[in-house]
Length: 182
Length: 300
Picture (tube, each protein chain N blue to C red):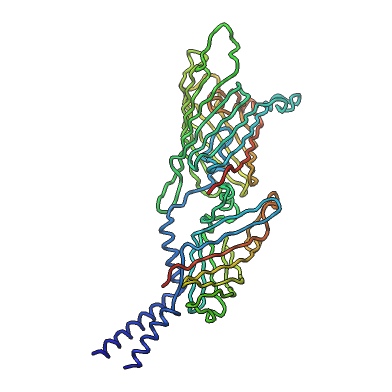
């Protein structure tokens, strides 16, 4: 009798604490191109991300057209000439967080993590690794990371004429508050 | 009894757990993507043309909100002037203009041409935008009303002219479709009203249908063609239809347009209805438009 009660409670607890997937539909990803002539920034605030607290699986998905620039023409050229968003509408990341079991999701703290997986965009998939942080504050989970990609790796060509204005490497900032769970 | 209930609960929780396990990360992501696709269902077609002008006339494009587009256009003399005039390069007509995006769907523009010392002003309003997804629209349609003021002296002091005689109005619908990444076509039904027609026999109201299009050669260059057909009976005698062939080069904030055309004018009323050059006689002139955009204020 007691055993059954105990195991029931245990499973319910484990269900609440571990066997959970956290997700968001409005995470943020921004990118920056820094050159001496011009700094370019674009933000996407409709990033979808799923964090599986049990397996450490971490996935991102976003629409290229969801990136917004300060300059309308830049946004047009970004979609038309560089990322070719009609042909390649989305970018995804599918990977895992190493040593996910070290994170206690019920304890307020900031945990440095290592993420590795496959980053796909512009029709190209590359392996990507980066350091990031999972921070837990009052039960709210936030994932953040900064990493650098090379445009050539994703076959994004820069014409000679604007070479001085667009950096060959792009800094990407990720910030997702996992506001929903399942 | 009590035992049974707990056992049942236990089974329910376990089953729940198993189901949760099966709906793994990838499935959840697929579901999120599906939901998002249903939400942002309308995808508007962008970049039907490189800039707001095809060659002489308008395209269906507007500058974005708070974007100022500075336009400088030249048309040189005709090629059949020969080597003495360096094939027309010795003389030129010119238009300076400013286009500005008030909203993403409404633009305003002003300009001044040396041809008949003409000032012009216009609006361009997007009525429909080509889109896919939840809202399917096969065409983009814009409306362009233009007012032109000829400020050239009449050269006839014996007669008194009113200011209103200097005015002409053009109403244009631009119906465009981007067929593929490379090919875009548009049709431009045009109505022109001149307050003064120089001869009584000439109509004040003129009608034309324009067709034009672009075929991209590379991501940043394209070949453009623009033709305005004057409807017989609503046409000035002795004029020809305007035909132009151009080449666009886009380099970030600039668009360079190089073209051959049979008209010296760059205001709708003048190049659509008063073109005198004939291609077959070699009345072909070289010209270019330069467009440079500036962002004014913050777009957020």
